[in-house]
Length: 97
Image (cartoon, rainbow, N blue to C red):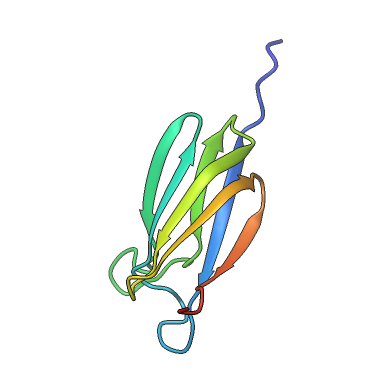
């Protein structure tokens, strides 16, 4: 019987400040050794329905994301490095310096 390699994942829960606390419209780029993936935070899925606002990435056999770049709807950019796989990660919008 052939043994399969583990499949890894990462779920991001973005949290905004004051207005737009659900981070709707935030754009995310995730980079692993296999390449890049892009997603946008949204709750729309079809007519008269909604979906989970958390963003799910399949990482295949990668055990971490090398870089996660977030462009918040306000234009603020945030980068995270070497993020471990197989977790639900809450990411709070950074305060403006």
